[in-house]
Image (cartoon, rainbow, N blue to C red; front, side, top):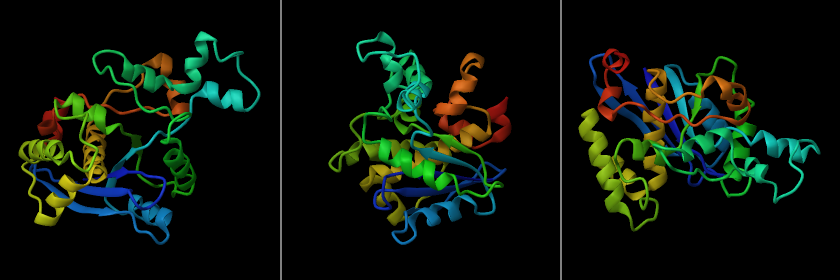
Length: 247
């Protein structure tokens, strides 16, 4: 089984891919870690997603927009003024509001009001052209996964915060008994977007094992329209063995 993690930026620069192989004996291998190719960038992502053996893809990007926002843009909906208490639904999706609740208590970036909207539009455009037989894709919020695993989830993005990224990487490699080459380790410590791609590949594995939070029944239809953040419900080490994780 192989999982693919993508930390998606608006352009190829800053977009990273991480492919992991999960073997039945519990061994895990980092197959590929690289930046999105500049030429034909979207085609590069689509071809990698469709590679034989990829069973699930975790993407660090919102998969949709709040239904209330889409209705507003179409001249519809029941929100009449910005001061309306319901206007929060223009900014946050159901999954964003769920993340804000305990125990996670985190608020993702707003896909309608923050810069994350540009990568989201890129994802919507490129994903529309994926082959029908492509593996399932799940939305990932790396900071939420890191917090769930008790790892640094704040203060790890800036170039000078390599110590926090090293702490996370050391914990992941210990839990998975994952061996990295020198260049792979250096890239994961140097670039937060590379590390987020690795985390996305881990969450994709958790999703295949049915160890991520799914939307409750009353939000299922809304989540299908807006997207749903998959937050892991198991420890990192539980990802190695499918039977142990599902027990």
